[in-house]
Length: 225
Image (tube, rainbow, N blue to C red):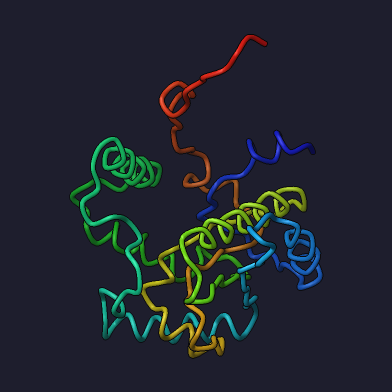
């Protein structure tokens, strides 16, 4: 598989098979992903790998925490800008509508939609979750480098036959997760990433988000080829 194929094959997987991912597999991926670029070679990323009984324990804790705090803990950052304008607002809305449509959940069925959203915090059945954090002293540049590292992880996972889903939803319970994984105070939890084997028979894995055409986001100020 080449890089073009890996980019095309990667998607946010929201239904996983009950098939174990070994720590050796993820060690290989993370060890290769460390070649991702970062300004000044700061390498600002931190990862905690959670699976097996510890993951089940954490998910149980979050389930109880979510019962007491259905809106989550006090957020440390906005997942989306508070006043999302066009075209971003429409893109986000359509993504959500298409997701629920793939499951046959109508807009008026609020309970079914909430239950599907809650599956975020069960990692959609994935057997492993990677939690990504960054030093609080870092700025937006280093957050971009963390993102490049995560993308590298996801593309390498495709090469290994694995599926992933980056999930900012975990940040809603950042305090609970930080305590559980022993996150140092100077580090901020950014997100989790579900890792496993995709259940391609599940309808939620058969749809893909749309992408804007090249001309919508690119300007060419180039001389002749």
